[in-house]
Amino acid sequence: MPEHKIRALIVDDEKIVRDFFKRLLAFLGVEALDADSGASAIELVRQKKFDLFFIDVRMPELNGLDTYRQIRKLDPEATVVMMTGYAVEEILKVAQKEGAFCHIHKPFDITEIKDIITKISQV
Image 1 (cartoon, rainbow, N blue to C red):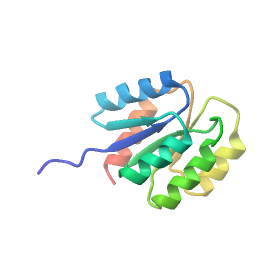
Image 2: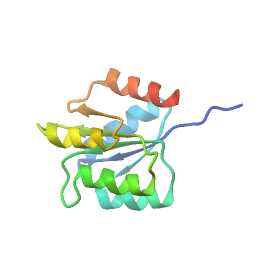
Image 3: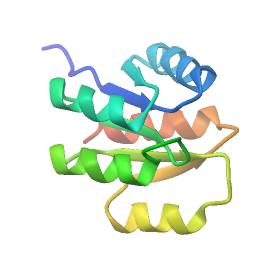
Image 4: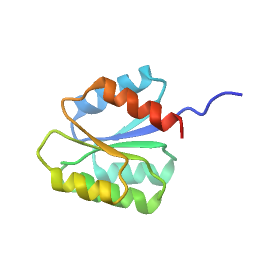
């Protein structure tokens, strides 16, 4: 019986970050789609089911925390990893309090990302 392939959505306004994640996740056997804004991500969530979300905290228009909140309304079981390259500890604390799985800091530690994928695949 084939294993369920994890489907992830990468939400970041920086193309280089989205491209990095798509390549890394593909290497780890994860199907990955990307969105360049919170609004685009929410639209994708309305169309498809995702197992895992990587959401940048700081984005124009709809920030990562508000994007996270909207996704949780559509998918209360969403597993979300918040990403940041800035000192936004208060926002990260709020996201974790509201159920975010964890957070990671830019520049990314590939081992940390691999560990997250391993934990998610065991659920």
